[in-house]
Amino acid sequence: MKLLQPVPTGFMIDLDGTMVDTLGDFVAVLSQVLDDLSLPRVSRDFVEHTIGQGSEHLIRSVLREVGGQQDQYDKAWALYQQHYEVLNGAHADVFPGVEEGLRRLRALGLPMACLTNKPAAFARDLLQRKGLSGFFDQVFGGDDFERKKPDPLPLLKTCEALGTSPATTWMIGDSSNDAKAAHAAGCPVALVSYGYNHGQPIRDVPAALYLDRLDQLFPD
Ligand SMILES: O=C(O)COP(=O)(O)O
Ligand SMILES: [Mg+2]
Image (cartoon, rainbow, N blue to C red; front, side, top):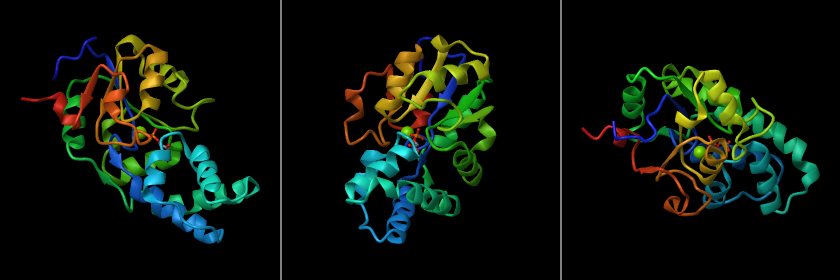
């Protein structure tokens, strides 16, 4: 393994943009929601720049973007849940290098959690559908704790569940959300370069390490 300093005692790995390319799912679900509400669709770029902060933030931002009313939020939320449940994973692919990276990380024998802002039920379902659930001791979603990333709370709670110290539990993510949460929790952070960072270059976000593939942690 690439020399990680501090030496890891556990891992927290983000889902959307880090393990699975779910942009197509978000675009397809939002298109259906907006069609149902007779509102115009949003662009793929808009969706890419807006995901990562949970579904509430995404739905509110989309309504604002297309000139919908915020009082349509409850209806939009319900439609979003309904469509997402059906489409989850249909337009999503595991990023290259992820399976091999997870296999090698798992072989280290350290506790591993998936920690995402995606609702927990959708996250568990997606991991299952993509054959990735077996890698994780814990899976936590955006609705499992009182606050979401970039707040440090989900990371601190996840370390507690893993029984590891935040100072040596690595967060692997794709956005400034993951990095901010990790810095505030006192966790070391590695960022992948291929995900969704709100349209900003990932190397502008402070991190201990940048990876073009997850299996780059094991270069041999
Ligand atoms: O915003 C979301 O729903 C998911 O985002 P994350 O998996 O990158 O945390
Ligand atoms: Mg992400």
